[in-house]
Image 1 (tube, helix red, strand yellow):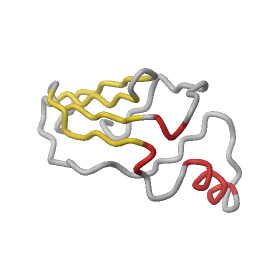
Image 2 (cartoon, one colour; image 1 turned 180 degrees about the horizontal axis):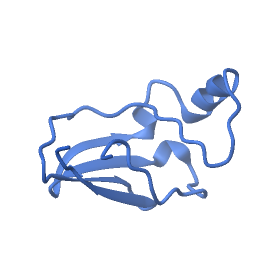
Image 3 (cartoon, helix red, strand yellow; image 1 turned 120 degrees about the vertical axis):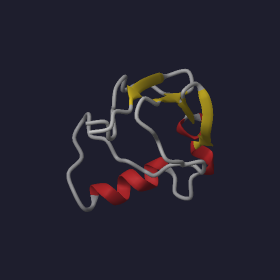
Image 4 (cartoon, helix red, strand yellow; image 1 turned 90 degrees about the vertical axis):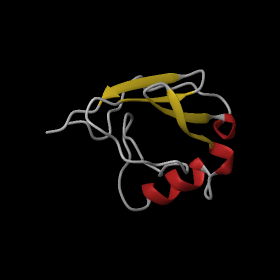
Length: 95
């Protein structure tokens, strides 16, 4: 239930290469990455995926994560933000 929460999907984001994603755990920044640092561009990834499956409005293509991954504990709060566009926060609960 705490895996891959998604919310606040933006549809007008301007220059894709200028986007920065930040992840915080309990308010402490753990990850920061710019789309410009990705190995493959977003248009290239979407083109590739669209040759394998049909993409519809609202579909999400997960591309990986910047360095800084660490274990999460019960009670942690994870916040992922696309700077200036969208932010989602999710509590971690041991099942």
